[in-house]
Image (cartoon, rainbow, N blue to C red; front, side):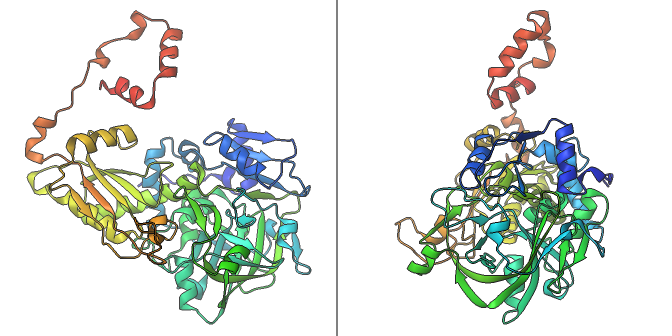
Length: 511
């Protein structure tokens, strides 16, 4: 079992900011920035770099904003006490099976300021407008929190895009097939009390992004317990001031309220005019395409609470390294655990490539141990499709393929995929992800329905166990040469600086 390190430095977002600065992983921007276009533009221009703290936001002198916190896997791994990000999935598995229950406290930093009258969310919070095509100023970094009877006795946190079209009410996307959407469906006809928590401890944010695999984490799961196990101590929660719900005690901002499951609203004024699913643009979504406005539930705010000292808004971009990694890393742990339960010991590793749709693909690395393992790679593909809604691509490769290199995976596809026996399809016509354009539009370009899963593609790129000798990879003797005999350190560094990533991998292993 992985060691459980107690990291007090990540108890809150602001203590994490201090940690990032101490490790040289924080960039402070002191010049004035506009939440309309400028913050998102800066974050994307500095993609996968340091976390960025915006200290001077136009129109919001009382607030700050941060982004790109989770834009690097190595940075996240260090937060949770792991030196190698490839090993973090195993710590996640331990956290899923050995959660630490959240702790209820009576007083919390997130309630230092309480606003119950004249609620105007966009006046208080520096909500971004991400692109010129956006349907409005969309909250993409809030973590929705429901618990108790509304989540079968468990705790649920998630990301759900939210658009405050009125001063105190918003559309909140919660599809059937998501935990939040399913909970609202079960309690349809009710006003479900809940909170939107912004600027949370890293473990809470991490879990909110990745616990979407319901076969491993069903309704009733203690998701905050998983977050507690990752950070090494309980997540503190506090009773709300205006509704029968809880807030994340260490959050920077909290919007209290309830979901009115009796009323549905369009996600933007333009969508309300055209009254057609997917016709009006919303904001860039995780597949890389412009998200489209839907009709969804109405959230009614009853209070805004926040820290007194310049609370920090959190602004991850849905289509970004940060957005991808937040969705991918815990999902990898779930997929590893799923397959290891089916076929213990066969799967060596699981990876979801950054930047190419974290919810739509997965790569498995297996090591066949005996002739009886032949064929299990296809079982893995079938299991992944069945357990994961909206999966478009599943690739299975052998242990000699580096799944963290897209080039090496592509090499395996080109040289090892047997088109006659190695291609499988996911079930056509099932439920997929409404964020994917193919869910709404067929190859003809005509709308074919609100949700229509066209079927995923499974690629078995493993070699026959009895014929491994024929697929022996050539290796040059890089381990037998010491470049320092012929070149200076400066010359070696200059060459490495211009080598593409795949060339570096080849140089390391000899081909």
